[in-house]
Length: 309
Image 1 (cartoon, one colour):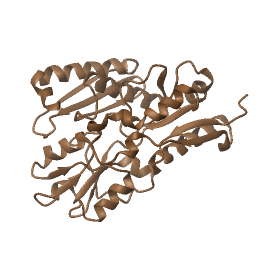
Image 2 (spheres, rainbow, N blue to C red):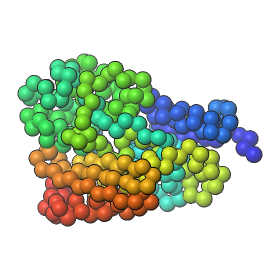
Image 3 (cartoon, rainbow, N blue to C red):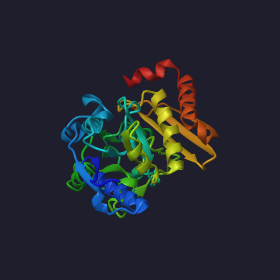
Image 4 (cartoon, rainbow, N blue to C red):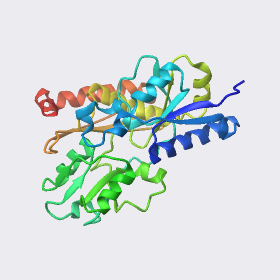
């Protein structure tokens, strides 16, 4: 019987803490345990500390997970809570994504200062985003817009917007909902025109292979449909590199039996894009994502990817 609290690792941003508290509350309810049986351990990651450069320049997605994963591997943490879209496609040996909470809204939210809709911004307006996918999609819709790299926590980005540093910015609507900020967006973007990042809106839990006690605890809150959908999207990412240097979008939906996936790749300037759609059995989710990645890579041809380097 567990006598000491389970140790949950997380980043320290308000959004990361909200996601961790949701995970803790679901675990406590599922197992009839008091919240005190889950100790939240906040760690600062390199990605949190370095905010003046694009992620691609300083190491990519792993910058938000490295410190947490080191403590998972050492046994100092029992599991860690992450935004699934921040996770590298290759994890350290001995760790895996053991559970996913039910997925939130997958749409991107536009927050406009000089116009409520992205397409209504004045010519030459400036939009800030740290995501190469969002940057490429903005340029695809509005080639005249000045797109700048714009990093920081949700609150930081909104403060910079209010100060007039940019005319608009984009954020994941899922994060705003989890922060109780549903009144902030001035527009919710249509995912058919502005497809989301793979795994956007999904909270994942990372734990150790072979830790049967912890993994059995986590299994009680795993949402199978989200798990299957994200596995498909991560399979797509893994086939196409999936680092922070690549504008990639992808979204899968599973009904528990079948899964349908739609993906897109773009050149960073948004001028050229390719789409792929695939469906199949939910049990083959990862393989379907890989197959979609191979299909879109063949469609684009080798010259397309030279623009990503």
